[in-house]
Image (cartoon, rainbow, N blue to C red; front, side):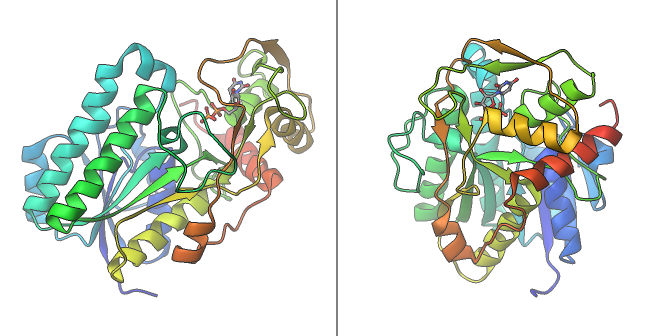
Amino acid sequence: MNSKKNILVIGGCGYIGSHMVKCLLTAGHEVVVLDDLSAGFADSLLGGKLIVGDCGDRELLNQIFSQHKFDGVLHFASYIQVGESVTNPAKYYQNNVAKTLTLLETMKDHNLKTLIFSSTAAVFGEPDYSPIDEQHPRVPINPYGMSKNMVEAMLQDFDHAYDFRSVALRYFNAAGADAEARIGERHQPETHLIPLALQAVLGKRPALKVFGRDYETPDGTCIRDYIHIDDLSTAHLLALEYLWNGGETAAFNLGNGAGFSVQEVLDAVEKVAGKPVPIENTERRAGDPARLVADSSLAKKTLAWQPQYPDLSTIVQHAWQWEQKRPTC
Ligand code: UDP
């Protein structure tokens, strides 16, 4: 294993960030978290030092980078709601793009040039083919995907101009929770299928709306690629190690490579929970492609990454354990 490193996790109190902090601590690294707590929770941290602040605050960043010598930065702090990005694009370009530019510039000024960036399958837009590999054209169809794509472009330019090394990781559907249910998905508002279905089973909310049964898929519901949050975190650690070992700036698609339909997810939820999911069939949700499945062979080959929890049932089981004991928010 690599020697102990100092890592800054921006947005470390969020769903993916908090599992990443757990992964880094387990690997024996020192962790500092910068989070403004706008969407994250301080009690989602299993360790590390928390600095509450804005990742676009240049003065604060200068101060942090003067006080700490980091070996790498992981950047998770972004807004993630596709629908909101359509109605309020300014919020997304301001937070996800402008603040990230300030972060990158400040890192460069402090000669800190190792970054792992949270990107998304939304950079691809409507897929031309499936599974989606890294060669697939990137034509985002909403401001959220566009904001991530713009940062990916900035990272390429920073690499060429400043020797700034980064890995952009394009997540498909992050899901599941810590196997011991210490942390898990805690979005506010929650928009994701698995927690919503589990909460509907528990009677914490009304019936789950199934957004469309008329897609061109075997059962008519949308197909997605669900990847366990711990497997996602491991990929980030491997990406950091890849950069520390001299790896070039890159972008990788992260998923299981197996697609499951909304109906298959609901079947898995019913099996794990032992109760039916109350559902309501509704219209399609705007902007949902029929099928989004990752080809992650490049990440597997380059990073020697292998998902540990590829089974949908395990992902749902961990989410279920978390959902039963989680704080109300
Ligand atoms: N979905 C649904 N009802 C919900 C939430 C999601 O039918 O209340 C569907 C959604 O249309 C998509 C899949 O579940 O096909 C996964 O959606 P989610 O929002 O979890 O993730 P996304 O794929 O949008 O990143």
